[in-house]
Length: 500
Image (cartoon, one colour):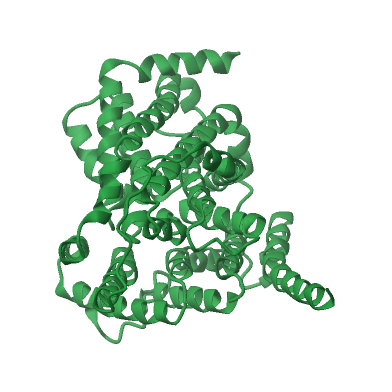
């Protein structure tokens, strides 16, 4: 009962005219920023944080604005992922696997609208989870140490084998290439430069935006040009702009499962939306891909990662608010905003400033509703990007990609590296090697290495810490099951078919 009283007070804060206006502005800005490849929620929040402070906004208003930008970016990342096969951020990588094939089949409007609905449900499920389970889940998250996080990363990579169906080795190869790319640059522990070839431009490693733009955007441009010259053409029909009741029912359980999974993963500090969306996609592929439609434009392959993506983003606020530990890169930036207002997040925050905490939680629900209202009517406008002819679309994508890459370090080297990675990505796509596991390996590689080193430093190199707790044992068993059960099941199917 006390929780409901606090929540009602929170809605009183969130629905104040100024806060409601800031939530709407943040939702719109977030959608646009998320739609632009390479920017993502971290950059969106980081750019607006000093502006909010300079405008002397109250603490709760500034946090509502930044939270709306964060959730809006998670909504917006799906747009370029579906329409152009260029993920707006790392969390939208999995959406492109089925979202872009749907757009190619003339179902861009359906993909955009169902993904908006899935994002909304994922956010709402996580908001309910925050209200009901925040203190309990925060204590559970404390049980995760470096060894548990390393096992969790390995489990995420084991899930990758499900992305390629009967060709898991290609997915494993792609993930290994991503891990290799993540090791380039200065080793933060020893101070040694690794795999830089004495090139000063690689001393900081390869930037995420360069990799994702090169492997997705530039390679997609090359594919588009290949289709143009071969006269096969790309399907440019827009079709329906809204999902129907049959599609809503079909994706209902998928969205529900993925929302809960995303929320649970989001509670783990540092796990992030990338792991959540990959795991959700893999789970749904295992459960529902009876006819081999995943990867070819299955609507459930779009709704699953989007629900998990947004569920994880909202869930990442739990460790930030209850423990003072950032649940994601974006919440780490938001902790900087709290520091600007001399606010220390942690368990005492719920008792010392309940109107701030519950106003923020209520604003998440308000922002999610505003984003659904903004995104659904604009589906037709977004989908009409597919009607732009190639001679105009290709230079436009290339120009946006080049500006995004150049803005990181302002060096032409990054542009050249983008081009090289684009050619490599095109060759890999022609060979049937998927891009999603490669990007996932690149994103998680550094986290995986750091957690492994921390775990081994605790025991002076003793490996037993990697399987010394019930959580790690459970994760290793789950990873083994993900690796071994699918080929055994396919073998059983072949034998059963032969006997029949």
